[in-house]
Image (cartoon, rainbow, N blue to C red; front, side):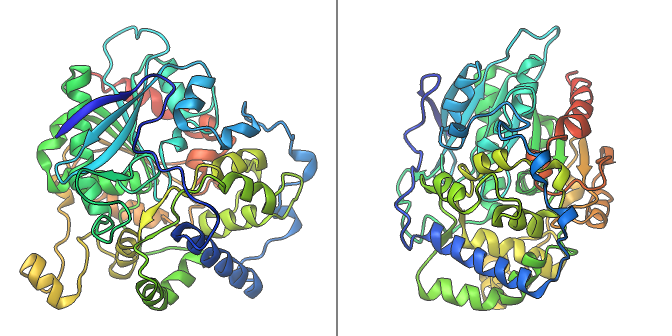
Length: 441
């Protein structure tokens, strides 16, 4: 593992991908495919979206419920953090298989009253470190933790906007994109955790993950169990480990069409989708203006994550869509689809012949969740259309040390609300931070 400080506070590391023009790039092909799927789902009226389900104009302050500005959708993560008065550094970490990863460090806003472990925060599928700062001061979990005296590290997984580099492989080559979330958990997380421990001179770190950020953690903790001793507390927000009961109409349609989509991408020699593009924010503002009640952005989020109009902020969502999607490999998406089809948390399925060559068995091996011995605090949402509550409960029973299994009190809370909801602090963050405080030894 090789690492170095690559940028001064407020600057961006050299491995950031700025995106390209809005042509038939992998990012735009992914967007058009998704828009077509949304149109098909809405046309079939699979989910009733009535006037009461749509955020009403009188409920929407154009200045946003959050303390954010329009430009927040176009600033980089370090620029955002600096803008709101926090000190930030960009660090480079190189995984043992050569992937170049950028990690942002937010310094504590004030000295803690007692010794505290650093907090590593890991984003979900096709997003980036922006997840944990996009709702601005007094709302974003990263800022709240820094206000509480914590040193906060924001990871960016391989293949995303800020971590698109390799020591020897070109990022536009098929070889670069030959990874799923398994490699993120097996290679990326250990490299980042070891770097934080060495840089901050600590024995352990706290871990906070949302969605895929939990998937990669449990790959690491089950496949490399020695890292359990380096985790003070794992906080799992909507853990995407067992995904058998997906309720999203768009998700179900993708599952039905997956073979056709896979063949199309192979024919076009596309190995990554939803790559970050610098024009995404302007595109989102064009197709989803703040004053439009029934924008495609609101419908898209509702059909994928679950409807929760009371927690939805139109201006915030436009800023969020300036940072997402941030990129993913096709193999990464296919691995999630395999989780749904098998109902099991296991390695990538290459087919019988490929599995025999890779695993010496015609079935891919399952991850041994009983080896994930670090304490785990779980929060899940009752209206999450991607991670079903029953899947979370089934997954939690496999873990040896669950210190909390908590449904979010708001029964309309959905999958993305863990990051973007107006009431995320009240419903979630203010509850989990005192628990985290109790695991500082």
